[in-house]
Length: 326
Image (cartoon, rainbow, N blue to C red; front, side, top):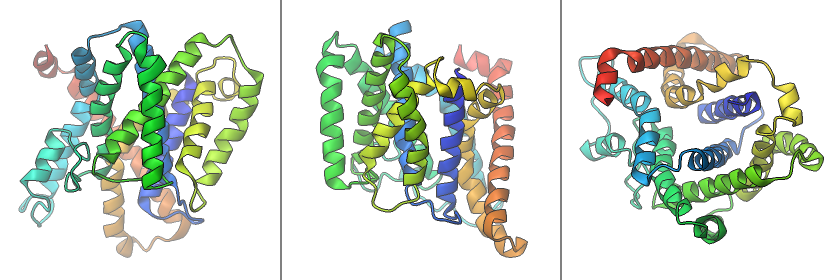
């Protein structure tokens, strides 16, 4: 993977981890906006996969599922154990059977039902929406030229008009809004993928714009009442230039370290809420405060994510697991 892409994956997933921690010294108000970045980036990868393999829709969906199923289900199993009396924690599972099913079937916030929110590992709603929204957008993409020329632009326009009407922040929960948000963001990414495939070459103007867009997107996260579509525009500029091998980002982020850090972005996403809860329980005993509290949390998230990736890689490479998937 291109190193600038890996850098931004790592950077923005850490921003999300900080926002969920609910403590940043100067107030990270719009950290939730990075979800748009990951939806758009996923759309770019979708278009590239479509152009390279053009898989049947069902096969594409199964491939998406396999990419993160092990990580999601193993962590869910750990969380259920920790909420079971007599094991790690001496309190019952807080969610009912219905919410367990939302997690197992990857339907967390996918259905247009207000009670489809599960609190086992709340951020995984993104992966649930990503799975089903990706299958829908991919199916539209396969409708000859109609997908790129009409259906996906209509999804972008209609989706964001609806979301902005509900809330200028784009941050809405349940009631089907998450799926609309996912399909709109993925559609933006697909259109960007098409643009990058057909653009004439390196753009100095876009390069200069990206150098403004990245710090501006970070700055806006510390402000109140920012229109969420502004983040969609800024992230789109950053993503286009992250894929350009001649961009300024490609000259800066050349260290192989970024690929290693970008490679644990999924694991950071999955483990960080449990680390957060653990710190909230332990902090009165640790007497940490201020920047040290945040720094210790972020370091712990990285360590746990690397350890979890190591475990998942070993399981995925084991013979029984390979037989299971064969």
